[in-house]
Length: 419
Image (spheres, one colour):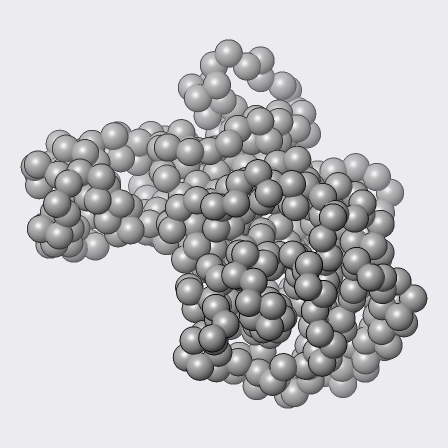
């Protein structure tokens, strides 16, 4: 019995589409959902340009559309499919193989990026199952993203050095200058990426244990972990965040900061949130600033998390800000806290179960609650500076958003987050 047979018995998966047997030394499969894409082959070329690792790599592209997709987009997908097949035929080697799947008429209820990723990732799981290789790696990538050429070798090296790692985020850096996009878009993406990095750094400041980037184009997960956690979801947006929030709390989560994914800063109306939607919203609102969370709210959260250990012995929380208290009462905290304590034989288990309750979803719920009732979102530059002044007081603060972003990138690339 192979390692993921149970997964395929329990969960609804599509038909297996790749008949070709995988190489015995296959270690990584990259999954790319593609819908209404103009330059998929540019992303495929970016992978093909990478330095090759010692073991074999596969790329599975899922060109997808729903039963209600407009005719012109379906036709565009078919043209993309032909181009991608031609690319694969020309560029496939013994160490790097591209497989192009075409999925049309997917059920409208489920069709979207989540289902497309799931189709590809389930196909990858099947291929590692054929090899009975639970340590095979499945990587998320996007059809409009690019890679620095050490991506494949750095992933191989990282997992060779850290064999117990369940999954990892890969460093990402949006393009912030050049001629491919307008100056307006470059400024917008600077502020949006700064927001993403400020948010994660603020979570690290408050000692939240699951403070990792969750970007669909820049993560890697081990095949057996993918199977044990029930695989990818079918959400039409935010599928990467929801998926990784099942993986990160397992522990042994890493960061591959020596490789770099370059996501696109282009406009998009395909999903209600994410990079493309954020850039489009800024353009629509005639602003280059992505309103971010007020740093003072993270200060509140820090005072609460610092007392986590004390809850193991005492149940009271009346000493906190009324904002914290109101949120906890709204979320039945006292009852759930008692249950957590009753099922925690020691403080280590208590803290794990506490953060299973106050997980990333609840953190965001709290941040949104605080800003809906008590705080106003702020310009990202001001809040990013406030955080640095307290969390990294030894660092000289740069003046521009661009230099501030570059600083945040360096801080996070040099830091391997563990608490």
